[in-house]
Image 1 (cartoon, one colour):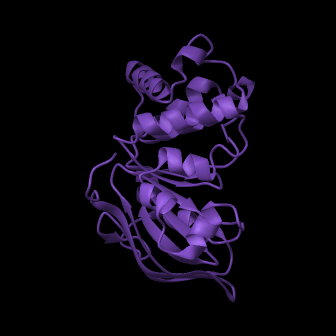
Image 2 (spheres, rainbow, N blue to C red):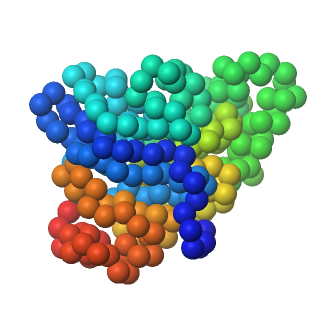
Length: 257
């Protein structure tokens, strides 16, 4: 997406602070995640990338002794309050983790699980959703003849694409990805990157990655985190060719991290 203006924000983060006990993990975060764009979140280990990602679907609240202040809105509604039920938020915001985590079920049942939870029982409709989701995840042709086999029989790269298909099956507005290719080989990584590119016009994506080349290839905007703060955020082409902060330049050129 090479347009000259930002898309409208899906998430807006203003003055977000987060503590694990007495550890100040996120400091005055100001960041928007824009509709139908890929936002890459980069930075060294322990800088707050994954913590921030997990605030976006409130998974961070599962960690004991977390406290949060500031504002975090999803489509204009504050999700840190009680006005947006966490179940409703997570039905609109899918998550893909570093390590593929298929359910101990068949390939078909992995993808059909979410639609069934949302009340779809009609077999023909489920079949259609499963096929459509697997096609979007570029996996259909590889698994169509073994849909009722265990998902554990798939390769790591196929399992990760299955997890993305599982997200897509419930028609999310946002998919959060926490280093989704770090455990994959180069061929599988390329397939997942192609998949991200193919779905980004339909869904908003925020991706945490340590891979600078990956961030530059697949994202529209990049936010650079360091020590719990955002040092710089801009269009990816600007971050990687003409960053304004020397720390950003040092990080993307491998001088630390």
